[in-house]
Length: 486
Image 1: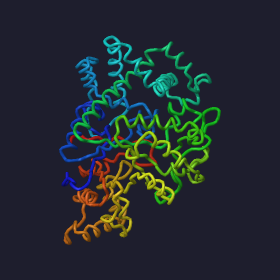
Image 2: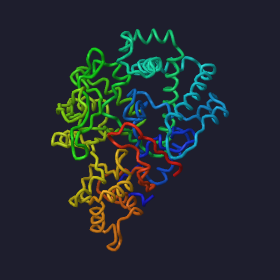
Image 3: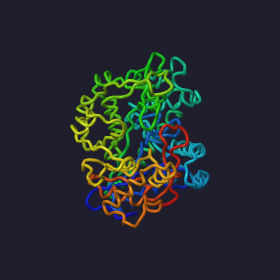
Image 4: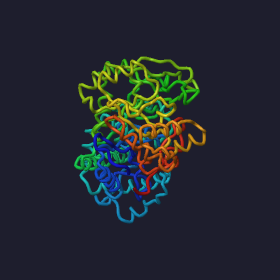
């Protein structure tokens, strides 16, 4: 890694699934603790992660089946063994080779079998009140979520809008009925969330002890096929059958001629405001149990959002609709400190977005890969109240960016090289190459005046696009990259 920054704060972006492990996916085990040690030893302050929620279609952490439930695939099998819930033979059967990717179907099948064993052993060796107490404590979201998971299995993952009429929407009586008929099916999902929370809490405590803060990530929208929408239909723009009237997206821009049609249901902000944004406060509170700060994804959608008729096949024909703006944050900040939030203000920025962000003092974001499309930006004159990134989970890796520019004969590499010569970071007789671009981009982020610099682990390792996490607009084939070591 390049020289650690001394005069300002730095951190590393790495999702937990990308950690090495013996069980097919990064998790909450010894490798996560070792990564905290790595951050501490290199004088970092932040570990930025992606959402920790239970992923749905496409294995995306941004397409979760619950905004509250943790991702059970992160549960560490070794800790289940230490708790006496699985045997060494069970552990051995759950091991999978690490070839630098998460193979989700194989991993999920293997871990599911291990988790079932652990649950059955938990029932015979632990006080049953542990799960019931946890269920009551987290009942607001956990009761609907556990029923949602049960019915999802019954209906073989058919979308909830096609479930039987009496099960199409959640109710407390539906929970009571299903719990009485299938207590183990419900408690199994409670068990996974109980274990996840316990393991996550231990990791959080260790990070605090080592002086490492966690930056979490909060998607603005939630998935239509989620327990959130199923159990709170009144908070979303839905018809009587549960289908959306309009859906979320972004309009056409320089990156997409047809925009991006995300398909998430839109919020009924009027109804949420009537409830003093209670659902949001609960959601943020759950996220901030582990994270010290949260990046609010698509921050501009709280000022105005792109609404597209649900029958459209692209995002071209949409409309800008006013968001909740100051009413939302005035309410939220009665509960949470403003220092807890980072504005992901990338995209179509307006004066209104800038004014809202600045009014509350939320730091915005700068992505260095976007700064060399022309030769006008002076990185060393950027404002201090920004967080600067070499790239994010949605971008090329820096090496991948350099190679893609080279292949497409784009001028970005030339502009970056000229700038580095101009500011004395590259000797006059030295070229910008695939061998030095990642280190130089990282050093440039560190030298900027921005008060926080975050670098993806892929750039620290100088990896190409084989290590890219996500390609926006593609639903399948993302989120697979893992480290084999570091």
